[in-house]
Amino acid sequence: MLPGRRRRPRRRGLGLPGAALLLAWLAALALAEPAARAPALSAFFGTKSRYEDVARPGPAAPAAPGGCAPLQLVALVRHGTRYPTAKQVRRLRALRGLLQRAGPGPAAALARWPLAYEDWVDGQLVDKGRRDMRRLAARLARRFPALLGPGGPGRARLVSSSKPRCLDSAAAFARGLWAQRHPGRPEPAAADMEFGPPKINDKLMRFFDHCEKFLVEVEKNDSALYHVEAFKNGPEMQKTIKKVADILQVPASDLNADLIQVAFFSCSFDLAIRDIHSPWCEIFDTEDAKVLEYLNDLKQYWKRGYGYAINSRSSCSLFQDIFHHMDEAIEQRQRSQPISSPVIFHFGHAETLLPLLSLMDYFKDKESLTAYNYKEQMHRQFRSGRIVPYAANLIFVLYHCEHAEVPGREYQVQLLLNEEPLPFVHSPDTVTSYQELKDHYKDILQSCHADQECVLPNINITSDEL
Ligand SMILES: *[C@@H]1O[C@H](CO)[C@@H](O)[C@H](O)[C@H]1NC(C)=O
Image (cartoon, rainbow, N blue to C red):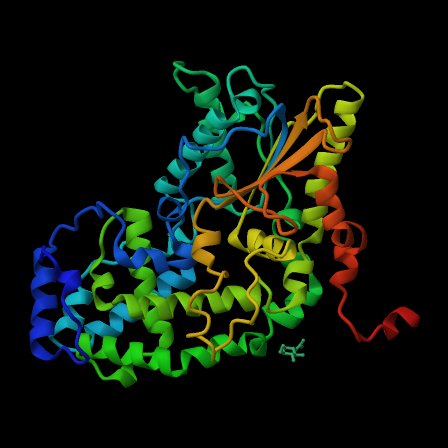
C-alpha cells in the first residue's frame, strides 16, 4: 500500500507520474486487502451504501416512553447487500473491454482487475446480505425483548416482495430471530420456518409495478428523467469525465457518464459485497464522488421521490395497510384480546421505502433537485445513501401506555429509521400519540386510493362504451 495516498493532492492531468503511481499501486494489490475502515468515498455510495457506514445502531437506544410498553412493531425492511443486476454486470464487462483495448498503461492495468461477478448473480442477496439481516434481527430482539425475545409472543408475520433477494432476506431475518429466541440451541435446518414462509405480496411491496400511471408517465417515459440526462452532460459531470480520462490516459471522448458511473459502482460493489478496497476507487476523489452521488440521487428523486406526485401516491395503499395493522392491534387491546399480529415485517426494496417516506413528507428540500442546482443542493436532505442503504428499515413502534393522564395518549407511536428515532413531520418529538399521527396524515389515510391515483388520465375508453 502507499501510505497517505489519499492526501496526495490531485492535479488535473496526472500525466506519467500519476499513471506510474496507479500502476505501482495495482501491482502491489495482487491480493486485495480487506477495507478495514470505511473509505472516504463510501459516504457517497447512495443506494449502494453499506448499512454500517450509515446507521448508528447502538446500545444507546432510547428507552420506551415512560409507562409505555411496545404493543406492536410494523416494519419495512430493504433487502440486504446484493449482487449487481445482470444489466450492471454487462456494463461492468463493457467498461473492462473498453479499457483493455486502450493499449498498455493505467487503463489496461485496471482492466486486469478480475471481474468478480457473472451474469447469474443477477441482483441476488450475497452472504453479507444474510448477515445484514441476522444482525438486524438480533439487535431488534435485544431492543424489543417483550415482542421478539425468548419470552415474546413468538408470532411474527413476514411479508415479502417476490424477488429472491427479498425472500432470502426474510429467511435470513427469521433465522436471526430464531437464534435470539432459542439462545444456546443449535440452529435447525428449518429455523426460518418458525414463522412460516413469508407471504409474497407484490401489490404491497412492489406497488410501483402495479400502478399504470406511474409506469406510463415515469417508468417507461424517457423524458421523465430529463434532469438525470441533462446532468450527465452538464459541467460537473464533464469535469469528472475529463479527470478520469487523464488518470487512465484514454481520450475523454471514449468515456461517458454511464461508464464513469459503472466504474464508481465497481468501487461500491467491491466494498459492500467483498469487503475489499477496489482499485476502481482510486480513479475518483471526493469531489467526483459527490458528483456521482448527486447523479444517483437525481434519479431516485425523479423516479421514486418528490419529482412526480404519482411516485409517492402509488404507495398509499402500503401506508394505509400499516395503519390498519395498528388500528387492529388497538381494537384487540381494548377488547382485552391477544394481539393477532404483534410483529409484522415487510421485505422490499429501496423503491418501496423512498416513495413511502416521500408520501410522509420526509427528506423534502425546498427546491427540486435539478441538473442545474448541484451546488445549491450540496446540503440537501434527499440523500439516498443516508435514507436507504442496504438493509434500510423503517419501523412503526406502537406503544400502549398505562396511566396516561391525557386521554388519547394511551396509544403512542415512535418511528425508527435505520434504528434511530425519526422526529415526526408535525412535531420535533420522536414520540407522538397515535391519534395525533392519524390526524396529521388524515388526508392520505382517507382520500388516497391507489387504484384511483394510478388511473391514467385521458385514456381512450371507447372500447368500454361499445
Ligand atoms: C413524460 O414526462 C414528461 C415530463 O414530465 C411529461 O411532460 C409527459 O407528459 C410524459 N409522457 C407521458 C406519456 O406521460
